[in-house]
Length: 630
Image (tube, rainbow, N blue to C red; front, top):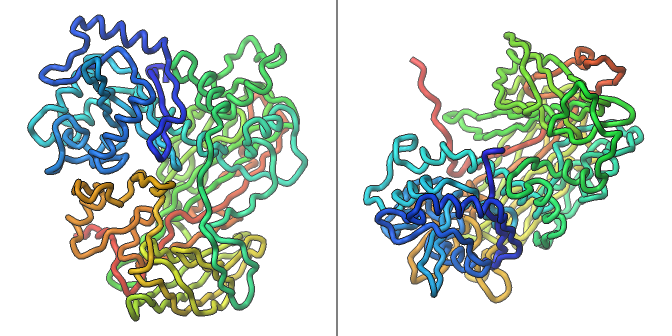
């Protein structure tokens, strides 16, 4: 990220108020010098705006952001030009990338208005993160010309298109990395990739000391993980016949820990240049500092991703974590679609700066397509069914490799879901599922939950008892816990059925829950399909496109973008231990370390549900047509 410099960043809340900001004077001085070198103060030809060498105040930026959101329909905006687009707006440029890289126009009474670009926009929870990277004035002027053209944009990749311009700006990628990391810190989502370890005592030392500094439990040794709760419902004990529990919605508001954010920004991007965005490393440096004992041997160069040298009991831990995405239709004319995406997580507790090599096996059978490697890895051997990796491991947990594959096993959850609306406010449903059919030990399903979302209706009551598990409801969903955590199944399959009726409150007396309501003010959140002003006739881009493509389908809440007419599918969540669905694996005995040390190698495999959808057999469903082979 040496080619990326950040001029400033801002964090805005749901009310479009700046709650945190940081400016980098060193980078800003470079920008002023670049503007002076242009001699014309970076004035954009044939355009009424100029790139001023000054940054706006927090109040000016908040006002500009709110004005843009009102003009563009939402925080993201339209991304494409339509009849209500005005010259100079992001939608006028007619490129979907403007939903993520936006422009703000700053208005000042004593000066001419000026333009801020490119602002990388990232939304996390109820906060919007804006990052302004440094670009050359010539690139700024090129974008200014795109804002004034009369045509409706060029194809992606052609000359004079916004996408082509951004491809030549590596600072955009760096700014996105900064925005996503800051968003994770703001939301408290800073855990490292999961590496399952044994329940043996902790190794102690530096790695364990990281736990308490900013709340990152994943760096210290921990026991077998407990399955995370699915949806916003209370945990109930599994029983032969399920009980119905009404759950209250939970608040997701989280205040910003500004001290942690200031420390991270100061350490990770001194003077505005991102150097290391690993929150674990930054926290370790803040907590422990450096000492002479941390110096590497004189003949070795210490990599940036390993600021500390490990000391303690040595071992290596690998975890293959796969995510299964499935669309189950139960229709003769539409085949089911199943895909597997996976990652190889690693944690190497090794002293010094050793090199680790290991072979990957099962690539041919799994039809594995490697997507990316960690920057510490080197691919040293290729084969039809084997690939060897060599890497110098960093501290803590990290993702060594990401891949896509096909499943060599049947779907872990098979069956169908049917729902028919017998009246406007009542629906009859039926589930018939088989879990873990054809799976033998050591495969074990830790938990399994089925959720029926109803984002446009409010659930009044539900009648029916499942053959196994328990049932609970929220205001906008029904949740069936077939297997609860701690009561998993191993080496056997089970059949689960659930039939009943679900009743909704009448539409005239219900209000659709909206994340955009706060106090007495109504603020349109990211990707909300609620109109801001009935007189403005501005709709959200997703709703606009949906109406064009599916005029007979009702718009829906974007928390459930695939839930057409609010009763079309059920979502399955589960976790499986003991193996990989793709068949890809590593042999712990084949892992070698140089220089040679006695370090045990632990290996674990698990699979979790991604978007695992049971489409309503009696309703509409989207699908991709497979190409015909002649």
